[in-house]
Structures are given as C-alpha cells and as structure tokens.
Image (cartoon, rainbow, N blue to C red; front, top):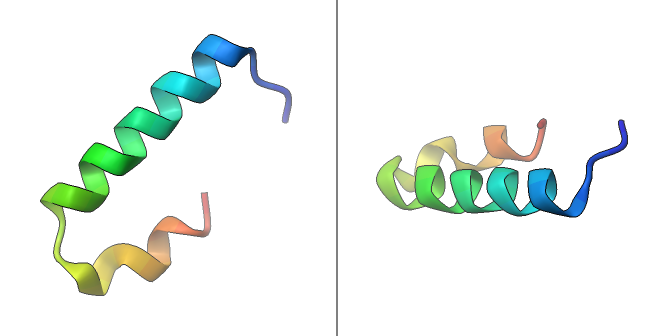
Length: 33
C-alpha cells in the first residue's frame, strides 16, 4: 500500500491520538494496521 506523505502524516497522527485515548490493552491490536 503506497501512501503520500500527507496521508502518512494524517494516519500517524490519527493512530497516536487513538493510542492516547484507548486503554493500553488495545495497543497490540494497533500494530495490525
């Protein structure tokens, strides 16, 4: 899957925000994206 720089940045910021909001237990599932 190829992403432009902007898409990578938005996806990364979304994932970091989501990781902060969700409990630590759900973090391993994040790596499947």
